[in-house]
Amino acid sequence: MDLSIVIPMYNEAENVEATLNQVEKALTSFQGEYEIIVVNDGSVDQTLEILKKVASQNARVKVASHSKNFGRGMALRTGFRESTGEIVVSIDADLSYDPRYILNLVDTLRGEPEIDFVLASPYMPGGGVENVPFLRLWISRLGNKMLRFAMPNRIYTSTGIFRAYRKKVLDSLELESEGKEIHLEILSKAIALGFRPKEVPVVLANRKRGRSKFKLRKTAISHLAFSVFEKPMIVFGFIGLLTLGIGFLIGIYVAYLRFAGELTPGRPLITFALLLILGGIQILSFGFIAIQIVSLRREILRIQKENLELRKELIRNPGSHEKN
Image (tube, rainbow, N blue to C red):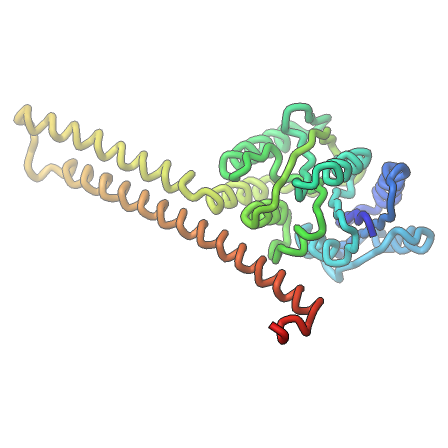
């Protein structure tokens, strides 16, 4: 199989047929075999029934289903596990990304062997957005700018589902996320393992049918948490330097009072300045320790990848290890 398209769906009865028709239409010029894997993530509307009907009429469409709603991350993990294509594309079910871009991502991977996965990016130069609600767009842009600073490769759009991967990338990752944070988990772990990403410009549009699954509070918290997780000095450094700076300023003021002869020996300002200075140093120390933990985590990921490749080699050639 040359290409697998993975589409997670939750209560998308209004979009099922339109989405699959658009994907099929976008792939009419594709040279090779492809499959469309749709994961029904515990929908309570008619999504599963419509999917089964479409799959019975189209051999390229395969349906996997969860008994309840686990989240986008779990749905994608199921789809990745079921996929057999050399290239795996994940795309949303609401047509917020036009499926015509699928071949752009695939052609980029095929034409550039040094690239391991491609990200569709509405926020990079050449990309764009259409009719996306202001608050959702503002939160998304702000979150991605924060993540761009935190991520080692300066990615413009870190949170989008629309991507194309070489199968070896997904096979090398042990994914754990159940929600939308899976996009950040994949990006972080793949880059840590040395896989090379590339962004291509696309246009992001608001969904045409159905209700948006966007959750403002949860999205904002996940973006902030991941930024701290990837680059802990964003928080520890800022708070530590701010605390240290305030402590030094108060210390300078205390010194001025001392030389002016206006300082009362028991004044709590002296103790407060010392506490701020020591606290700032302590917070910065936590930041440096956190950096070492992040480096250790990345090294563990690399070791896990090597062990996984070794296990696969032993499975393919069970007698080679004994001979050696």
